[in-house]
Amino acid sequence: MSEWERMRYLAEPGEPALPPQLSQYADKSTEEVLGELNRLPLFMNELDPANGDEGANTQLEALKALAYEGEPHEVAGNFKNQGNDCFKAKRYQDAIDYYKRALDVGCEDPVLNSSLHANTAACNLALKNYRRCINDCKECLKYDSKNIKALYRSAQAYFLIQHLDEAEAVLSYGLSLEPDNPSLVSLQEQITTKRVRQRELALKKEKELKEKQLVAETLQRALTLRGILMLNYAEPLEHMKETTIKLEDAHDVESQLIFSVLVLYPTTTEFDLVDQISELTTPKQIMEMVTNRDPEYYKDPQHQEFTTKKLEAYMETESGGVVKVGKNVDLSKVLMTPSPKIPMFDNYLKLYLVPKSAAPDWLQKWDKDVQLKRRIKK
Picture 1 (tube, helix red, strand yellow):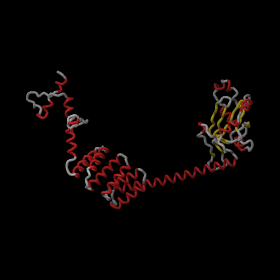
Picture 2 (cartoon, one colour; picture 1 turned 135 degrees about the vertical axis):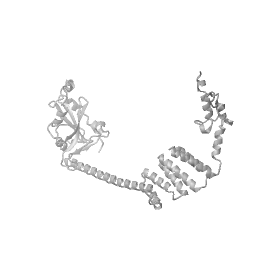
Picture 3 (cartoon, rainbow, N blue to C red; picture 1 turned 90 degrees about the vertical axis):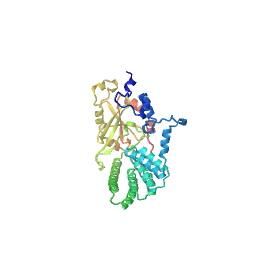
Picture 4 (cartoon, helix red, strand yellow; picture 1 turned 135 degrees about the horizontal axis):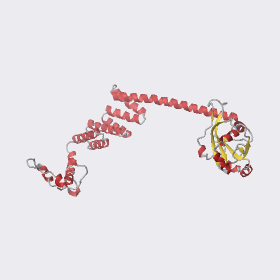
């Protein structure tokens, strides 16, 4: 038996035959039957424009024309009902389309038009089209200035876009009409809570800003009292952009300065970042930190002189030169020395560690003009 013969409806003896209106489908395949049904507006799942003059679906066109038969308020009411059905199914954009069709009919019934705009506002509110919702509510209120639903939806939309003054103004009017309306009262409470929260956040932000300013002023006083010079590069080093300088006690100018040190090894183009050390640290202590490495590191010939005894410490001067600094001198004393003046850069200190044997050649090649060009001119 073929697939079609197995699927066809064949009345057995004593069983009812197909009703007359379906007899035309008796000898057709399933695809053919579905194709025919798709031509009927109630069964359509895709548009078929092929059975009338100039390719029009006459049944569909007739159904469309039928939708506009009757008085304007009846036609508009019919579209409104279809829109309401879509709204219940949460098909908000389809509902809007139906409400717009109803409005396009040009019905002069103010109650119906007010309702249509209010319903469109509800759809746009659900779709988070808050501006459109507000505009729909305004149109609704032109027909009915006391429409509570429009007032509520307008206030809610204003609230959701953080326009609390406008929301409160609309709510105030709505509550003057219905003081006990639960939706209006609830939204008013939400706005009140929002206001309180905003004031709390504003006070917190103001307090944090004042604290930040106080800390910055205290730090600047500490730098000034110590005579520390802070310079900046025109193009700060990428890996140093997040470095900070601070006081151990942010409110005490006499507490220790804490900052980072960029340790450079110019004979190898390597570098280390020693983060957050005290101003009382010495170059020797920094050397001990950075030379505490795995023995494998020192098997490389260029690293064999990287020991505390064989390294010398240098720092840049304000004039762009470079000067040797004592290994056992606190960094604070180095920075406070009036001449030669050693500055900090972008909130960190630069320290060059050079093997004694390589120092003369490195110093001879130093170009202070190159260093000065990198800085922001004062």
